Image (tube, rainbow, N blue to C red):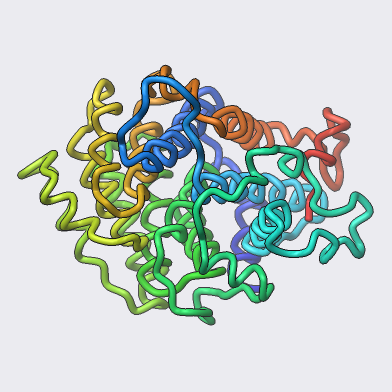
Length: 369
């Protein structure tokens, strides 16, 4: 077993209470964060120029974040039934299912040994996830080669934004020590370097928001943990994040500043721009303005995805613009995943190694492999 598998087992055995927030608050936080992510992804897709009517479409980043969440649920199901699990490997299989649904890899490629057929689970029947929405070339290349990387053995050279945006849901799932390492490993499946550090800090910040911290403190706590546990393995310094948070306090909501921090479609730009935006427009009533501002960064919309996640987590789903949210095509998928994630960790509906389940259909929805 590698370090993440060992840490996961330790967490399940002795630290379960550390992982669990109050269920009602956890549900509000999880729904707000994931719905905010999906909404930010969609607003970013139209560069913040949201039409008055019509559906708001997802991009590849939003799709992959949904598969991350589903993979985390399935990892927990596997842990409950098998007693041991390697979560990045389960999430890797989730991304492979996404690629199969989109015709990027063969559907039958991983069917051997899986009596349910493949792709399996309920997301395989969601039409929107089968639609190609933008590109994720680094992720697709790794999935086609079926060769995942790790933090200590990276593959490729990409430091692109999807490494960060798709890893943000890890913060809904694990306490800070595990969240930053797990997010780093999930990012490292396909990316390397500063992208891995950005993913870890982003997911850690999300988690600390869920535990009741304001954005500035949430970022500081996450950054401190990453600097200890992840960054020494990656050898990547990220001073731009500190600069972004400082600028938000001194010169908030400045488009020139935003474009300096988010000058390209890298993971670090997405996180720096997202932090700057969320800190600049931190009030509950500012989310609409924040998402439009973030989407004008010119980085491909990734800043809006990060901003939506942070602000949704801070203020909850009821603060998100309902006229936009109701037109966002992946919103019901994201809402179901957020609810199911909290239900899995608090109730374990399929049971476990030594307990009976309460939902006979849960395993077919979230097979533990």
